[in-house]
Image (cartoon, rainbow, N blue to C red):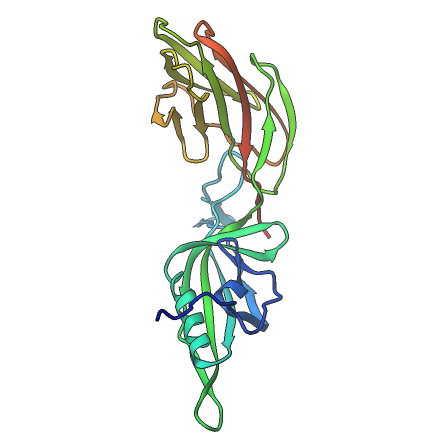
Length: 283
């Protein structure tokens, strides 16, 4: 007879709102300890060169186009505990251990978003009662995190034919847009035609080159994905080139202008387009 392994995990519910990859700690059958969370600073990567006759030396720091230096990773630690009978505690250890060494998302540490990084699981400290039975166990989780917290993905619908859209970019650090163009190609036999997909952000333009070959009767809209964060462009999932003299634009926080177009539209039945981006918050 097979044992029933489907049961409610976590004898004590976690109330910290912390999550790992979107799952609350109670799903891992653990909870956080009081005063068991710390978030270290993210130090700017700077460099100064001493020089005779110049007080303070020369600032040799490399800044990005917006005047920001690179930031080092930050360490986030959380002390967690598992309680219950020995089988429940052992199960909690295996659930947490499954995430050891992985890149994960930790939510609930700030209302602004999630921290991303590689998780390390420390040694478990077992605590027994007077009879020698295991009653609870404590462990420290360490996240080697990227410096910023990532907020929920934002979407900005764009007008067609290169008309300008104004928006306000959330966050307090620069981020990058992703253009989504959903193209319904004309059905039946058409002559393949080269097209240019253009995205302009705050006056900076990037052009990608593809080909419209026609679509089948039941085809879904074909997607162009111009990903400025990862510096790659795909058409129907396959990489396509951008203009050799163009570059992928970024966006500082605050007011921004966008426009996007597709030309020529000889083989286009209709299309839609929008921008997504992920706000970045440095705290």
